[in-house]
Image (cartoon, rainbow, N blue to C red; front, side, top):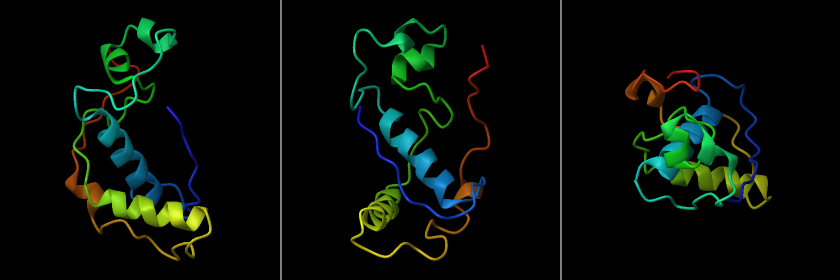
Length: 113
């Protein structure tokens, strides 16, 4: 699976645009049983004792199997455009107001059994 970094200049917090992008990206990649980009057969996560790591193909299990906000793709696109220089970076948060309050407060923990 390829990856990219985005230029998001807000302060990292539970309510930040960074958190919004992270939560929804993980949700998008893991919401279905069918993996978008399955890991290779040699991926070490296949041997994890955490079923969700084996099933999702991701080490980061926070936000796994959560629904994602389809509007997130528009926010993501704006940050991609800013990162590659097609648009100026946002000067303030562009994630929907209150998005963090609407989502479930329970999270899977890497350390849970």
